[in-house]
Image (cartoon, rainbow, N blue to C red; front, side):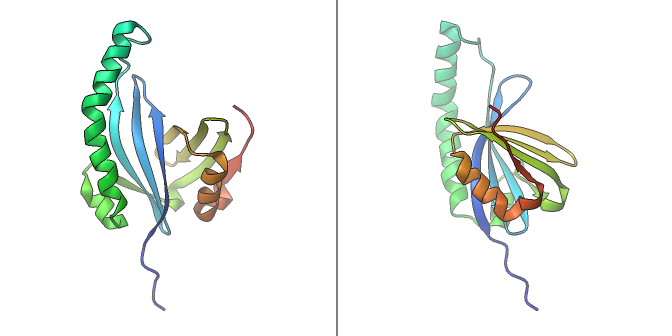
Length: 149
C-alpha cells in the first residue's frame, strides 16, 4: 500500500504571550503533524505610554517587512521545505498533542494547545468556526470548544 504524501491542510497565524511581550507564530497543519514557524517576537516596550506606542510602531516598521517576507515565502512551500526554511521551525507530532481548547470568537479566537512538552496560549483574528473546522480534521478527538471569553 502506498502512503499518501504529506501535504499542508491549513494554517493558523497567531500570537503567543511570552513573559515579556509576545511572539507571532504560524501553525501549519498537515495530514501527519503540526509544523510551527516562529515569525517574530514583540517586546513589552514601554506599555501604553506615548513613547511605548512610538517604539511599538518603529518595531513594526522594521520587523514587519522581514516578517512579511517570511510569511509570503512559506506559503508556496511543502512541509519539509517549511521545516528547512528556518532553523527555528519545528514539528509536533499529533501523538504528542494532549489537548486543544478553542474559545472566544468575537474579534479574537483563543486557542490553548497542550503538548507533552509545551503549552501554547494563542490568540488569532481568525473566526472561531474556521479554526474549529481545521482542528476537527486533524485533532477531533483532542478538541474541546467552549464559550468562555
